[in-house]
Length: 318
Image 1 (cartoon, one colour):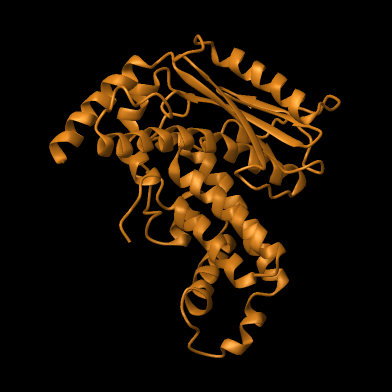
Image 2 (image 1 turned 180 degrees about the vertical axis):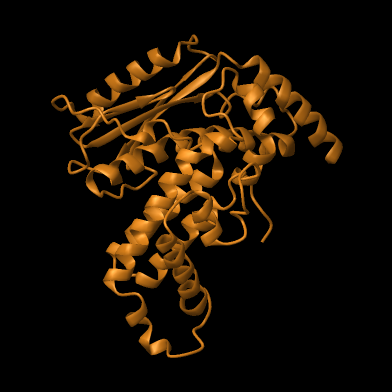
C-alpha cells in the first residue's frame, strides 16, 4: 500500500505541475440582507454586496477535481484527491478570513465563514482557462444575478485586505477571535475567554525565529516582542490564568464565584487586547514570512509550503 501511495504522490506532483492553467472560482454568500455593505479586493479574491448578503469570490488552483484518470487506485485516489480538495479549500478560506475581519472591523459583525449559499466555475479541464480577473468578473455578475444587486458600496481600505491570512497562525487566530465574539454575544463568557486566549496561543506559533526574545515562551513575551504596552501583557497573563483555573480545567477553588472574574468589563478589555495583538502580529508577519500569499506558480507554492500546509489541513490521529 505504501508503494502505491508513493507512486501516487509522484503522479500527484507531476499532475499539479501540468495544471498551472487550471483554476476554480468559488463564491459564497456571507450573512443576509443585514450584512455589512462594502467592496474589497486583492490578488485572487473579491467581495461585493448583494441584496441577500456579501458575495465573496476567490480564484483557487484546480486541485479539487479531475483526479480519476491520474490516480486509478481507489485508495490512492481517496487520499490524494482529498489532499487537493483541502489544499485549495485552505486558499479559499484564507481569503474569506480577510473579509470576516473587515466585517468585524467595520460593523462588529460576526459572519458565518462557510456561507449560506454558493456557486463555482471550473476552468482548464473542459472550460478554457481564463485570467483570474476575468474569472472574478464573471463570478460577480453571476452573484448579482442570483442574489440581487445593490447600489454602489464604499470600498474598504482595511489593512486586512493586505494581511497574510495564508499563514496558519494568523488564519487560526482570526477564527478564534471571531468565535470568541460569537460566544460572548451568546452569554458564554468562560468559553469566550478560552477562545480569546487561543488567539494569542495561535499567534505564538508564527515563525518568530528572527526576533529578539522568545514569543513562544509566554503570552507576555509575545506582547513584548510586538512592542505593545505592559498593561496588555499583564492582562494577557491574567486571561491565561483564568482559562487554566476555571475554563480549561475544573476550578479548584471558589468555582461558584467564577462570574466575578469574567464580568463584562474584563471581557471587553480582553477582547480589545486580543484584537490589538492579532493586528500587531499580522502586521509583523512579513518580517518572518514563511508562506507566500501571492505566488506566481501554485504548484511550486504547494511544494514549498507543504510541511506547514499539511499540518494545517490534514487529519490527525486522536
